Image (cartoon, rainbow, N blue to C red):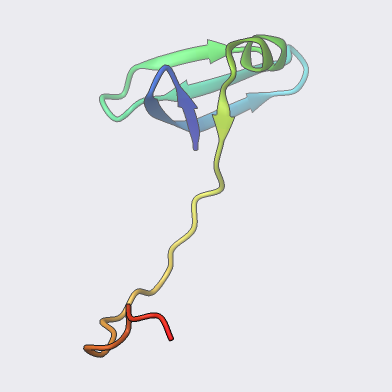
Length: 64
């Protein structure tokens, strides 16, 4: 995942030969960006992970 201009994009393709990354937003719009542009624009990269969250007990948020 990449955050560009406060919009999350999926990294849909990496073209190493041409040094281009294809980003796709939630509406399917593609944006092409080079690593140099990504660095200059302050693009933030995230690793997408699934986590399991469960409900805690009534005292789960109390600090001791």
